[in-house]
Amino acid sequence: MSRTCTFKLEIGFPQPLAGVDEAGCASLAGPVVAAAVILDRDNFPRGIDDSKALPIEKRESLYARITTRAAWGVGVASVEEIDTINIYWARMLAMTRAVEALGVEPAWVLVDGNACPRWQRPSKAIIKGDSKCRSIGAASIVAKVTRDRMMADYAVQYPGYGWETNRGYGTPEHLRGLSTLGLTPLHRRSFAPVREIERGAGRPDLHVVEIGTGESFESHPPAVESAPAQLTQHLVVEPRSAA
Image (cartoon, rainbow, N blue to C red; front, side, top):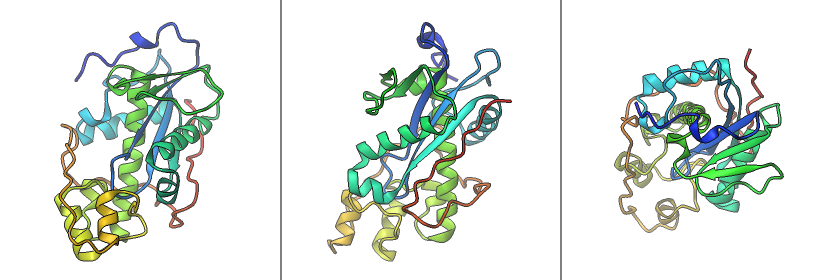
């Protein structure tokens, strides 16, 4: 486990401080999911790190502990929103919804990446923050586990694309499914490989994404609750607070 994911960069910021991260930006299908987490520095799970660097079992275990010990919220931007406003702004929208779902207004927000949403709250963007700041690392875990579970559910609804393992990313299996089965309502038509299929251009060029050490293609447990079928619904998980 990386030893760089600590509270060091967070010291000095007013409390409560929220970390924010998202999952699914580069996927060819499914929503983009963001999470916001406010950790209790006296009672936080050990082992928090960038979700992509963690094995699935470790990620699931940390998710369970984070969501029982921290204040957290999840925000989702739909496929329709991604195709309408583009993935960058959909990401910002999902992060805004995640912070709003916290149920408590943070004094400061630390965001993974190089830009913050246009919100009226003190915030700072930290490049690779999910591997440097525990709060952002925790948010990356909540966002990824939430989205992976959604994609596992969607894989049952739309078999043949391998979403239960590739999470909607542009793997050879997914692209073969696109070529043979065509598009689903969950495919992002604003993304080039999907757009080529929709325009009848034939098989898209392979667009294989690099998978982190924790991203082995294994079946993911189904979601506890199925995602709503109405794809354009603005999904926001109810605020949860630490006991």
